[in-house]
Amino acid sequence: NAGVTQTPKFQVLKTGQSMTLQCAQDMNHEYMSWYRQDPGMGLRLIHYSVGAGITDQGEVPNGYNVSRSTTEDFPLRLLSAAPSQTSVYFCASSPGTTSAAQYFGPGTRLLVL
Amino acid sequence: QKEVEQDPGPLSVPEGAIVSLNCTYSNSAFQYFMWYRQYSRKGPELLMYTYSSGNKEDGRFTAQVDKSSKYISLFIRDSQPSDSATYLCAMTASNFNKFYFGSGTKLNVKP
Image (tube, rainbow over all chains, first blue to last red; front, side):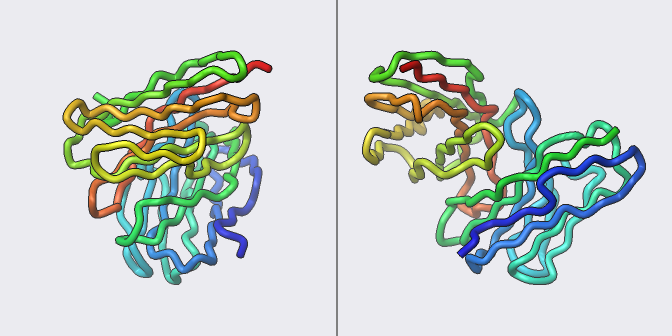
């Protein structure tokens, strides 16, 4: 049981490049979320999903896209990277309506030059 | 105004001290309250989970929720150097859709 996994661990991009951050969970959780963590800002919600085929925007969705074709996977796409997207990105999953407990992945550190 | 406010610290205490960490919030719809511990360069891990008002104890950790004051606390008894980490409060309404986090308090327990 790996829990929540994220790849890559670290990535450097140039401004304007696109990339996909991968997230997968093996706990059969319905809910999945993407956060970014910046110094002094805590965790801010980018996008979330309450089940396969259902996604919605969080607090800071601009510049990011998501899709949820399976229960297990929830990739985050950066369409055209900007230096303001330099951050640490965390994926989380939770059972859904039975529990508010979220389980986090190890994070992806992204540097946009 | 942010949904959740948390003093960023840092908070430095000697080993064995009682630590008090706090968050305030503005949204009366929040029903579930969590505390996460995050070690440097790691993902947050769930520490405590409470519903509505009241206290919950787990070993050296006690979580308190006062919904009338919109104030939550985490107490750590007999603090250890291994407790040195950033502590994040989080909360959500009953639909569990969106979670709101405090900015985190960095705790340093000195041996």
